[in-house]
Length: 374
Ligand code: SF4
Image (tube, rainbow, N blue to C red; front, side):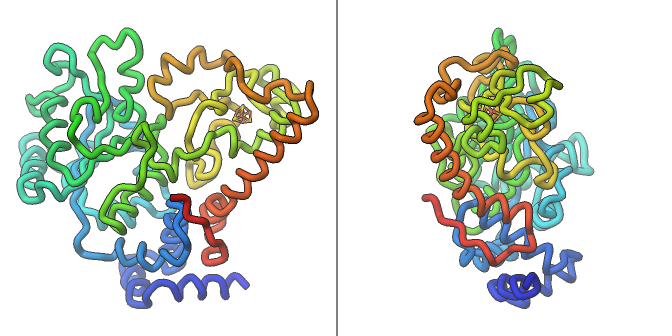
């Protein structure tokens, strides 16, 4: 049965493409797994898989200039350490990352020359990726690279890019450097370069699967995915964490951990009373997860801290205080409310199933038809 499913999905992608990836050391099974996971993450119908495969294979891939400003490099780490689904091998090796301070062999003047060569040659065609916030106080002196301020660099590079992707909460919304009292005047990329086309991928760190999917979308359709009012792609930030959380049934049943390590906590009950911000946070952490889809904070026993929301360090703290006025809390008081809560959770769970299973069970490629959201 599994072999049959693999044959069905392989039939969606040209034999030549599969063979070429095999010669590059990527088995056809891994390549199909990658394409199906990307298609599912983007909430595209599986019939789009062949187009995704062709786009990744095409020769006209845009170069990437990855800039690191006021951040901790956690987003680069998250992307480079991810194996699922061979993101580094498929995207980094075949997308031309012409400038990335952390991973490039060149340094100093050589590195700057590489960046400017790409800038001049591909003006208006390259993808700019920004990690870290941009300090704007006192003319931007708090972050300089090669004698130039992050503010000036961002304006020049992002202002002339085909598209800019702000990775992580610092680049997206200012993040921790922008927390009160924000001594460096840290701002987001879209604030620093108001005219640029910027898509935000907040999270501490970003989820590598979402960055890969956004790049795949750009390669496939020539534009970034549809975004919400905060510039976040809907495929990744369209649903509340609370609505896809595996502990949601316990929330609806009024079963809460009261302290770390207590009986409820050990049994996987809801972490709301321990400060979980999942009811007010939009991200696909529960379905995509981190570390090859292994786990995410709530599964590991810690409440969500709302890191994909603007100014989370100020607005979501104290992190261990419970959110006020969450609808449905204390639902034991009303059986009707319990019923409504469970019905809503079940509907969302069905919607998320395709994404979750495609990511966690690569063997099932071709067996899921994921509804397009947009
Ligand atoms: S409050 Fe947190 S732990 Fe509880 S169901 Fe919502 S997201 Fe999950």
